[in-house]
Amino acid sequence: MRSMAKSQELQASAERFFPGGVNSPVRAFRAVGGHPPFVARAEGAYLFDADGNRYVDLFGSWGPMILGHAFPPVVEAIREAAGRGASFGASHAGEASLAELVRRCFPAVEKMRFVSSGTEACMSAIRLARGFTGRNFVIKFEGCYHGHADALLVKAGSGVATLGIPGSAGVPAETVMHTLALPYNDLAAVESAFMARPREIACIIVEPVVGNAGTIPPAPGYLQGLRRLCTENGALLIVDEVMTGFRLSLGGAQQVYGVTPDLTTLGKILGGGLPCGAFGGRADVMDVLAPLGPVYQAGTLSGNPLAMAAGIATIEYLIGHETAVYSQLESVTRSIAEGVEQVAREAGVPMTTNRVGSMFTWFFTGEPVTDFAFASKSDSEAFGRFHRRMLEGGVWLPPSQYEAAFVSVAHGPSEVEMVLNAARGALAG
Ligand SMILES: *Cc1c(COP(=O)(O)O)cnc(C)c1O
Image 1 (tube, rainbow, N blue to C red):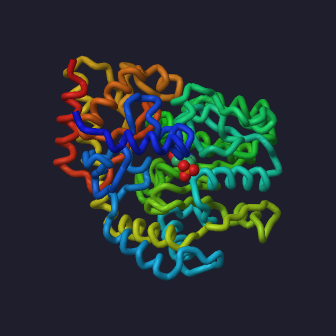
Image 2: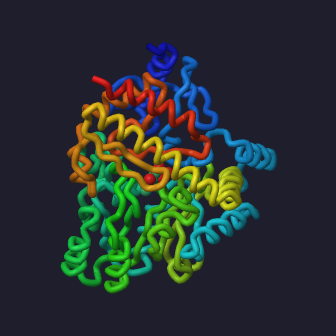
Image 3: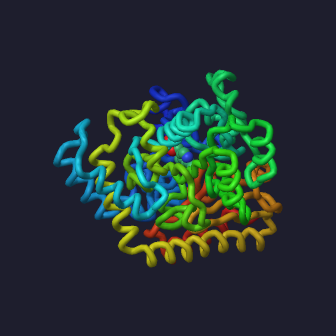
């Protein structure tokens, strides 16, 4: 057994300050049991805990760490920026430099605003869509997570699903009464909603590939169908690429699936590991924001120079090595995802693997998983057991059946071998 003494001591100390000992609920490992290791440092494909144990990292800080941990060009960029001052509360050249790169990758993002989290990006995009259209209703999909703003905490997948609750206490019914939560991958449900509320629906917000119910790809034509229904009904299409942006390709899921949103939200990889998000899209819509228009949105630390520097270093690297990065991510992730599925098959463990590029989920079910209802049929006990054994075997998976796993460019053949070896132990008997 690996020693976890120091981590457990730190957890006890953290519980004196933080509810559950954590600053974000899924980190507490409630869905999988066992004790969360405390991280001392991270490098490349590895996390090192306070007891000196090493883990192959398969959750990548929940998505941002596509270049691996402590990637030297990113570390250097942060160091340099820090020397020039951590925050100005005024405009600086780094903001437009990162915006230029974002627009090069996402041509649909004509104008944008930087914020400090994905939550802020989605919350602001919704407000803007409502302000622009003068309509109140928002369509979201079951199992999709768009951050923890009140109006979006309805059937929100991820951490909320892990806790087995539909929404959240503290969110008044009045706040979510304009939020329509529909099943994912079901265009007929969207069509009916538009028919039931003509000229009342401001926007659809969607995870183009769901990551927050575990990985669920869109059915062929689904995203195009959403685009068409929005256009026909005068609603805006918000594609939430906080997870998929720069992950599935440089231009995110909208590039992979060929769909053009009115608004896009970004986060995670955008900040290279620092707190950063963005929302952007059609210039005529974005110009409705203050100070040009009546929709208010602001942020003390928005466009933070350290976050811009880390984002620029990350995205410049991705642009400069586009073909190599995304083909390596594809092949290494395929080896990991399909390799473990093969181990499960040999062990007689029912498993469905959903994977798009370098994001994937092993669902402990024999059935295909095409929406949240199917995802929730997974055997979460079996997943919990698998998670604990993999951790013991030196592989750190996302601690919930409803979270996507991620691979970085620092992962290679030896990490694939380590994951497969751990899985052989974890799935035996
Ligand atoms: C992570 C995530 C968010 C929220 O981002 P935070 O930075 O955690 O607030 C929103 N949407 C999607 C699709 C995400 O994966």
